[in-house]
Length: 79
Image 1: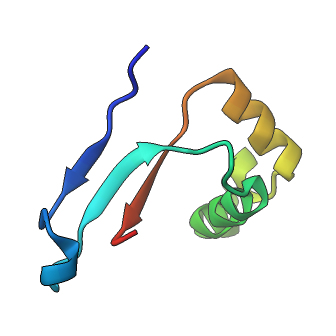
Image 2 (image 1 turned 60 degrees about the vertical axis):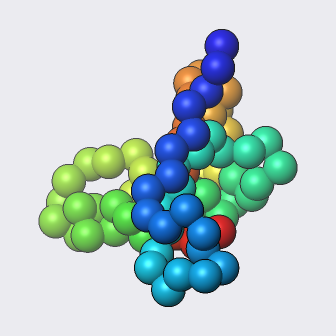
């Protein structure tokens, strides 16, 4: 199965000050701990509102399990 890769913005990041957004698959070499911390930050406001989202405080093991069960994409800017 081919996994798509998207790039939005300037084609030449080195010559442009415009931000470039890339959406790509999460790499096995990337940190699951860092991804989990990102999820905690992203969902903290919802948790503060009393909404019950697993990502508010899930352990890295839960993140890893969910990665194994599906396809995970990340969005990065100028990376």
